[in-house]
Length: 465
Image (cartoon, rainbow, N blue to C red; front, side):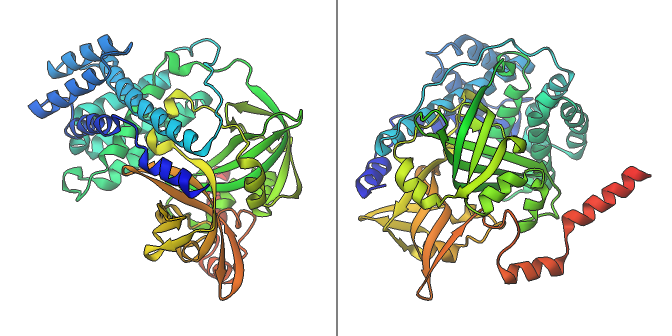
C-alpha cells in the first residue's frame, strides 16, 4: 500500500458520516435510560433517527414506532423497527467507508446478491429472545438488575437447542455476561453504550421470524487452494472465535478471492491466552495450516459469500506458503466479497493489507509510510500468539487489517517482520495454533497447568454420574 493511497484513505472521510454517528449516539443514550419512560432528550433522539431514514422504505414503520415509544406503548414490533433503522444507518456508514477504502486500494468487490429460499418458521427460541430483549430495552442499561439478567437463561438454552439460533444464543449469553459484570450500571465510570446497543439491535434482528431468517437453499461450493494471510482472534469470557483471512485460488483458474474462515468454541473466563487453541482441537487440518503457514487444499467447501463454512474433512494441508509472499503477489488482484446486510457496521470493517518500508513512532502507536501516518491498534493483539507491541514497534513490514474506529482508520497487525538484536524476526498471531513455540511461554503454561484438560475431565465425571 503506497503512501499516496494511505493519504487518500485518511483524508477522504465520507460526507454525512459525523451526522449519522450523532444520530446513532443519541439513540444509544436513550437506550441507556430505557424506553419505559422517555424524556424530552430521548424523544428528540428518536425523532432524529426517524428523520434519518425518512427517505427509505423504513420511513413509515420507524415514524410509527417513535410515536408509540413516546406515547408509552412500545411493543416488540416497534422495537424491531427502531433496531432496523439503527442497523440501516450504520450499514450506510459502513458502505460509504468501504467504498472509500476500495477506491484508495484499487480493490474490486463483488456485488451483493440476495439469498433465495423461504422465510424461517416461527421459533419458540426467537420468541423468547424477543421477549427478553423487549424487557431489557424498557429497563435500559441503567435499570438492568440481577432478576432481569437471570431471566436470560431460558432464551439462551432454548436457542442453543435450535442449530439455526445458536448465533443468537451466544450473543444473548455474552451480552448478559457483560451487563452482569457491570452491575450496578449506574455506578460504572464509563458505560459501553455503543457496544451494548450494537449487541441489542443485532439480537433484535436475529430474533425476528421474517426476512432475517431467509437462508440460501443451495450454498456455493468451492474447490481450490487456500493461501492464509493472517489470523484474527476474538476472545470473550464465554467464547473464543478465530477468523482466518486468506486468498482462495479456485481450481478452475478463476480470479483469486479474498475469503474468511471462522471457527469458534464456548469457554469460561479461566481459559485464556495460548490455551484457547486447545478448544479448537476439532479442526486439526486448519490449525496445522495456520501454525505451519501452509496452503490448504479444499474440496467442495460450502461458502456464503466470502465466508467459507469450514469442514475439516474437506481440507488437506499442502505446501508451505509464505503469507507475505502471498500478499505481495495476489492481494492486489484478489476480488473482495460484498458484506451481508446484517454485518454492515463501521466497526466490522476488516480489510487485509500489506504494509512495507514504514517506520514506527510514538512508542509503537503509529506508523509512518512515505510521510503519511496511520494509527496501530496494538490493543487488539491477542495473548494467544507471539505478536507483541514490542515486535510491532520494531517492525518494518506488516500484514494487517484496516479498520475504522473512533473517527479514523487504524491498522491491526496480524503478522510482522522486524529486526531484534540485529536478527530478522517474523511473528504471526496463529503461530501457536498447534502448540506454543516460545520456551518461556511454554514453561509458564506447563507450570500453570492445562485448564482445558482439567475442565474436560471434571465435565466427564459429571456426565458419568
